[in-house]
Amino acid sequence: MTQSVSARKGSGDWLREALPKIVLSPSLALVLIFVYGFIFFTFYLSFTDSRLLPSFGWVGAENYDKLFSLRAWDIAVNNLLVFGGLYILICCALGLGLAILLDQKIRSEGFIRTIYLYPMALSFIVTGTAWKWFLDPGIGLEAVVQSWGFTSFEFDWIKNRDMAIYTIVIAAVWQTSGFVMAMFLAGLRGIDNEVLKAAQIDGASNWALYRRIVIPQLRPAFMSAFVVLAHMAIKSYDLVIALTNGGPGRATELPATFMYSYTFTRNQMGIGAASATIMLMTIAAIIVPYLWSELREKK
Amino acid sequence: MAGGASDTVVRTGRVSRFVIYTVLIVFCIYYLLPLYVMVVNSLKPLDEIRGGGMLSLPQTWTLAPWGSAWSTAQIGIEATGLRPYFMNSILMVVPAVAISTILGALNGYVLTKWRFRGDTIIFGLMLFGCFIPFQMVLIPMARMLGLMGLAGTVPGLIFVHLVYGIGFSTLYFRNYYAQFPTELVRAAMIDGAGFFKIFQRIMLPSSGPIAVVCIIWQFTNIWNDFLFGASFADFDSQPMTVALNNLVSSSTGVKEYNVHFAGAIMAALPTLLVYIVAGRFFVRGLMAGSVKG
Image (tube, rainbow over all chains, first blue to last red; front, side, top):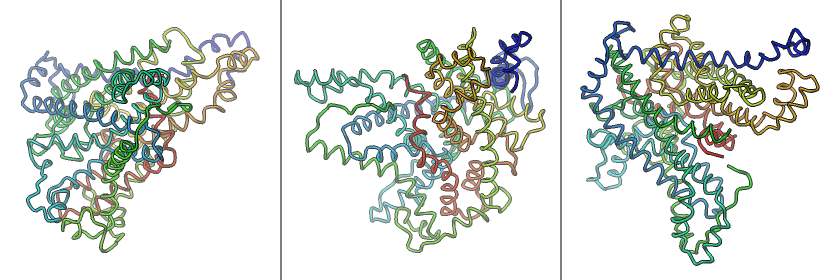
């Protein structure tokens, strides 16, 4: 910590120049090795015959050929499309709707906001546990409604192969929609009221105000919400494990759970690495343009 | 959220206000329902849950499920309850949060006040590291931890979280320090103050708010992590989330739903408390990475 003193002397000029970079270098080294080095390593493994352990026998694109012909991967990707699409759509719709309602000079707005947002502080494992038993037909919602006398009421989505993926959507929306609401609310608070006042004087209805003036101005908030939600959807792992563990059958497998089971339990590390590579590329396609525009703007 | 933000000028009538409040309250119930389910069912005997009474208040109030979840429930092969795993999580979270926050502060300081050619690229590289699917690093990390002799240990988990936490902590401090007047730093330099002295005397004293944001964010993320814990921990170093999942998904014996709910609340309490006490900072942290301006 005394370098700064000696730095003023002539011999310390080099040190003085270099000190900031020296301070930054451990972090940079960690990131270069553990993010980029590891990405490269996994990428390389996806072209090898690794099974139980990493191995370096080159097999070209064989793992990708196998991956794309696997029914399990097909199911995982389809599930991701259904889950991700609905998740993003419902979160945005719910988030925008609640944000607009909360923006109407609501009494105790702060309190309501706190309630909407608290699920974001929970672990997906906690969320999964709560919803797993709440949606369980034996003890949860179905049993409760039946005990109220509606004996023909049925709600067994979590045990039903065709419907189980929607229970993941339900729990994930519950967890994140409040956050999306907060993003839209921040966007709404940034809108210039003068324009709205002018439009009101011209006799525009509230509906028209929102449709024509407010919502178009929320474009940046929509962009951020999309990027955040899309990358969360692709990375979804914990929630599936806690809620359904990929089942029933393979009904709720997603690429993240596929990668894990092929790599660590089925000893198909090459295929697992290939699936991880596909996940990374999908996320990069969404994140890189976003970060690029953000960093350029701030210059 | 900007402090001076103004409410909308949109006017609403009596009927529509009634509708608005009704909808808002319905959604309050929706968001609170799972928490209510967890709390009431953790306080009732098992047979009350089995009889279709998940939404009712307990007829017989009992703390037994809490005791069981904390100290006697079967986790994996041992009947230790969640207590040791709670301790693991604390031992893991504290150092990982502290170190990643300190590194983030130093990085943010360098990247804004000691700028050099290529610093934006370095920041971009760090930032992208926050968003990668961690599936991409699981295989080499497992090997690396083995090489470093940290496989299956709490220090191993600390290391992993610290490495992947640097990106976000750097992001917070960089964006915060970017608003800080560079003239003050220049003036101090002319007075002969060095790199660390400026950091300690000028930057640190005004870093309180962003440090809170960063610590809360890292704490929440690391406490709630499941993937790294499940991949790199042994039975005796598992964090809370992994132990909770083992408790809930174990297929042997009777499913003690009340114990599961009590365990879930235990896993949720630390982050929930932080959220209730410092929610404002939590929201700021959430927004910092995702909202322009």
